[in-house]
Amino acid sequence: MRTPVSLCLTFDAPLYLPVALARRIGAYDDAGLDVTMTVAAQPDDAAPMVLDGRADVCVGGPIDIMLHRSRDDSCDLVGFCAIVARDPFALIAREPEPGFTLDRLVGRRFRPVTDVETPWLCLKEDLRRLAVDPEPLCPATPLSMGDGVVALFAGELDVVQVFEPHISRAVDGRRPAVLLAASSRGETLYTTLFSRAGFLDRADGAARRLTHALARAQRTLFTTDPREIAALAAADYPSIDPETLRLTVERYVSQGVWSREPRHSLAGFLRLKTAVVAGGWIDWDVPFEACLTNIFAAPQSVRSDPP
Image (cartoon, rainbow, N blue to C red; front, side, top):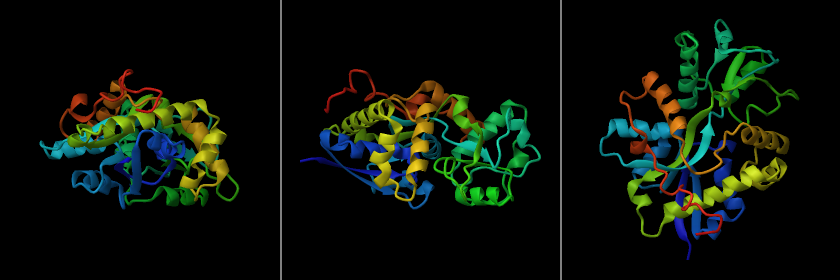
């Protein structure tokens, strides 16, 4: 009998394709897991679903772990399997701008992401490191990424911050021009699998087996033609046309956005933490060990064969 595990996704987007791919290649079944997936009604609802027992595991950002631990000393959320290792967002425009640099945003009609917090926090830190004050660029009102792209091509905005599929999706036959891919910043730990400490300690080894399944999906992702990966995952993203999904896979693989292994990078965590603290999102210097573990990602733990 397979062990049931419920996953809660922070949102429904191809950024989480490795989690879906593990199911498509049979990695969960081979690990003896019966994995069910739900999408949180709102991104901020995902972590509470794990905290109150409605889900075993959340697919979400380490920022959520930091936030909840900063609010509650007894919080036992722990990330145990890296999914996204670099910033998946990009700045797009209607036309290319060779040699674009972030200081060119000053005075432009620009809209950062407001759907979730992490991308704008990280971009603000990038701006501060260039001695550019990000506050004048802060949006007065929320605007979804989809609406931002519509406004961009309507000529109402000059630059918008989005992730896939908005980076690669054509609008009236035109695909946006990428001015700057945030992945070029380097390692920035964006997404992990996280749960309460009790799940990691379960006698059935569900967390370890889940990590093994994701490691297999990660190997497949980086050793298989993007066209084949897109075809395997197509059923999970019915609203995304095949060409856009293929371009998404090519972009995120080539840029190293998806993690190649379950291990969390200390450098990636520190880069994220710096942006979160500088942005005023948390007010304490949370250590790596308080949020993340690599216990299941050790070389001897993640094997090529099913556990």
